[in-house]
Length: 315
Image (cartoon, rainbow, N blue to C red; front, side):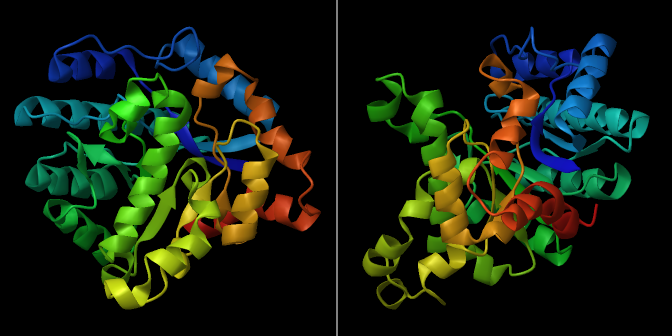
């Protein structure tokens, strides 16, 4: 059965804490089953059963990370969100796991919360949104986080922040959700490559959502025009990109799926849903069923849907 690596969960109290942190109202994805309301949990589980999803790995969506200038409020929001996620995992351990969220940009507090989430709450990896207060999380000030995850041979799961890569050429034209998030995915992959983070921290498993955005189509161009020789890289950038893992949130695009498998190999593509975001367009079952209906080989479909996450995370 499927392990959904990319699923969101926003309890009401967590959104209230984010509202204090952001200084504006933060809502969840109602009417979709996104909260800790018992009816929402029941409906989420029903949809998981219908879709053949054994387990969801939880993290916050764009615009819901506990990031903010106010250190105390960021810490409070991160701790509350992680506690509420851990509570759901304890209640239904066979159906849910969680990544730990961090109170960025406060690195010392984030290291404390990382350790608490992994050691005390039993979370299975770290969620980093691609930027914190419009600073790439590949910048040097965040390297202590990578050092700690590397020491633990851990997992980092990235997610867009929803800031249109700080570009008015995206935001002003209304393409933030449709295109900006995918460009964020590509940007973090490129930043990791440019900063040589995978070679510095080789024991981290990096997971990038949405097929990595356009990056599957850029690998030969990267090798030619961002070459290892000219940039002092330890290997061609395409080789580093192939070390990452990518989830299948692609709004049913077989072209994107095929391109990702051709670029990275089926063994580096993981099932993800962006739950509950795509429920506005399709059923949860359809979010995975289109992969089964694609022209990929039966072996590749089985590896993507049923084997990769289980083997990668030991679930």
